[in-house]
Structures are given as C-alpha cells and as structure tokens.
Length: 282
Image 1 (cartoon, helix red, strand yellow):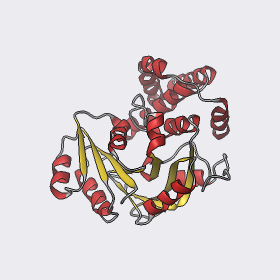
Image 2 (cartoon, helix red, strand yellow; image 1 turned 45 degrees about the vertical axis):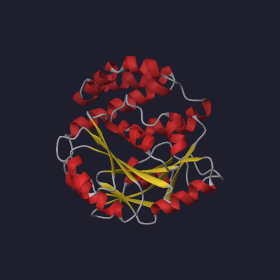
Image 3 (tube, helix red, strand yellow; image 1 turned 60 degrees about the horizontal axis):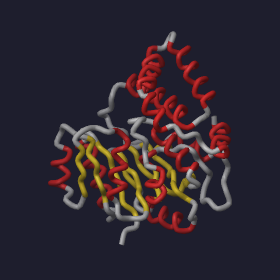
C-alpha cells in the first residue's frame, strides 16, 4: 500500500497536466488534483483520460493554498507536491518514505529539481545544498528554511499542524513562510540531493512583471507576518525608496498594504531560535 500521495494544483494548463499525469501513472501512487477554477478543459480531460486521479475542482483560483485542500483529502502519512509541469523520478517517493521513517523530526524534504528538457540543476538547489544552517545530526541533509514546492515532500501531520500554505500570500513565494512556520512548530526541513523531481516550465506563464511584483509583495508580507516589527518597517521603507524609480516595487508595496488587515489578524512572531536562523540566512 502506498505511503505517499501526490498533490497537484493546476489552472488552465491541460496539455502540460496530461504529460505530468502520464509520468506519475508509472509510480502507481494516489494522485489528488486540485483545479484552481480552470476555464479550459483541464478537469474534463483528466476525468476522461486519467480516471484513477482524484479530482477536486474549486470554483475560483485560490493560488498556492489550493494544495491545502489536496493534503487534507490525502489518506497517506506523506504527501509529495507536483506542479502541472513537473513530475517525480521513479525511485524518489520510496527514498523519501524511508527517510521520513528514520528521522521522526523531519517534516519536509526538499529534493533536487532538474530543469527539463536541458537536464540542468535548478539554481535554488545549489543554495540549499550549501545552506548556512549546516546539517543536524538527526537529519539526512542540510537544514533549509525555503524550498522549491514542485520538488518537495511533507509529513502530512506536520503540514496540517501548521495550516499549510498561507492564503494571504496567494502565489508565489509561499514556501518561505511555510518553512518558517514548520520550524516554529518544532519540525525540520532539509535538502536531500538523492531525491529527484523533474520540472519542465510551462510555456503558458503570466507576464514577468506580475510575478516580480507578487514576489516583492510576498517577501514583505512574510516579514510582516512573522518577523520583528522593526524588520518589517525597515523592509517596507526600503521597498518604498526603491519604488521611487521602480514601478514594480511601488505596485508591490501598495498590494502589501491592502493586505494589512489580514496580516494583523494572523501575525505571530517567530520563536527566537527560528528568528536567529532567518537572520543568518538573510
């Protein structure tokens, strides 16, 4: 019986999604697809061509927090995340399951992500492999406070305990805040180079300016949600100064300010030991 469920969140990428599901079919594990309000035929094509996939359609796009629905629906102790344009190597999930079983404090595994079709390493993986946090004796790799979601696996218990990906951020950059919350709850995340995911970035991506603004916004929101107020004020002022000559920064600051009421409701400063780790990485 499978110990890992693959959870995918998708929106309007039917072609890439079919390629991913064809690769995952070979793994013979449960797959839960959460559709983020697609307006193409994504849901219909999956129901017709991949009847073994459990489909959970949402009425609207909720961003990265769509994965939370998939994790709640999973019935296995571990969950592997794929995007609609990524898939796992044949032995990746078995390797991860053995590591979770051997290391009870391990809440998240960040695997090696290979960019296809070139077969090159995602640069973020190089950073994780050389993490300034070092490697604890009870973990199978360097400690991390960030990861690439399409190359990550979680202990379902840990994920649900911290509430999953925060909907305030929407997308992207949700991984950092989740890592902080995981560490604050006493769970560990680490990079394991031997566990491999493949990512062939979709050709149907939004405007680069929109992503830049969202990343800047979410960096600031994450700081406001968990870090000391002095750090949050410093980062906000820095973004404001940058906005004098950068429209993306100004738009990001405005978007973050509109989310302040939600931030105020959810603000919960990190424990001192986790804040020290965040400062070290910064």
